[in-house]
Image 1 (cartoon, rainbow, N blue to C red):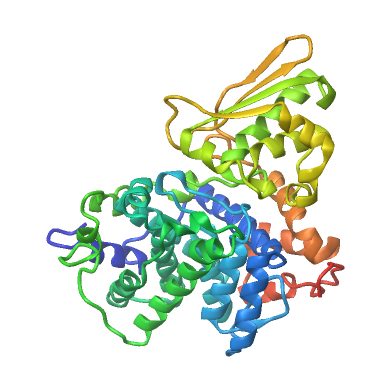
Image 2 (image 1 turned 45 degrees about the vertical axis):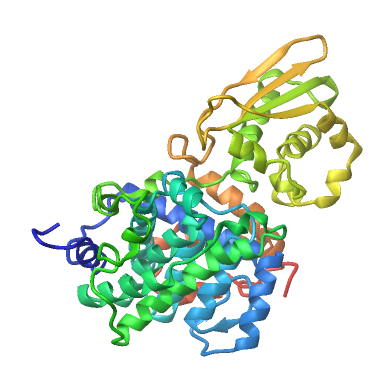
Length: 460
């Protein structure tokens, strides 16, 4: 930061590329994984209720055919595409998450960047730079507001607030905004930053998809377009009085917005979910897989199961939705020997007598002294009295236990096969995992809609 320079100006110069350095190779590769993971979540989500609602909404609006509604044959303007793809990206609990900021960066930042990259015919390498930048800015802005504390104290959605700044940064960089224009874009983003935690009462995972993915993606693209068109904004919108941080001064820590900028890349601290279930359930599935493989027991050998979680997480996992009900998911894994996208979303399986019998043996309890975000602890008592235990530790896909390219592809296949079919899925995943070689993002439209690559997906 220059002497006398405000934080908004520092961020604007960084986003515009004035002070940014090329990404390290490992950051670029991790970004490829997150783009691939998010695109697969969008394709899968396009067939779920939130994605279907978004598709119907933007189809009715029409618009210039600038960008794809991924997983469908629709094309629309960049604002509508960002909205629809953002909602599809969080139509389910399959997208990535960044724990320190309490955000899901991919479901908003990747759709915003894809819309602009496709419309402006930018390359895969350009997209990678913009997405990594969006993660750096969006997560830092959320952390500067307090992250989880911001959400708890003010009942605002850290996911939406962080998302719009990440999307503004990614879109602005792809559009080539200069420092002055970027500062105006950030000012517009401050005005549009919104989102209330009433989403926690959303029983259908539709408004939540809008708040986490669609709204910030569309807002960030809008902020960048306004600035590109010459629409000016108030100076120092973040730090000035009145401004963003002074509005939430009890938890705000403005210096977090620039801490480690250019050195610590936040995409490296972002998790990819191995299992297509809610975050609090990930460790329980890791644990039951590990214990059954190590000790060779089946559902008929189980006398009791106990799962402990931090209090806040324990409240979430007793859900009517199968992919967020941890007792159901552990029983499902024991019965099936796996937990696929299809099986964890099969509401009918919640009435499966074999799973219900295991649920009757299962207790889910808050763990005294556990900190928010800690993982599940799993205890399995076998008939005969032997007790097996799996302690809380980083789940597969977290920064301390990252997934391989092969695991990302395997998860992606599970997500997109029902929509794109085998040929379409293979073609899309192959292109995504070689994203740095892609000369024109618009060409990906050849493979991310049903039938485009000779696919045999279920939905036209």
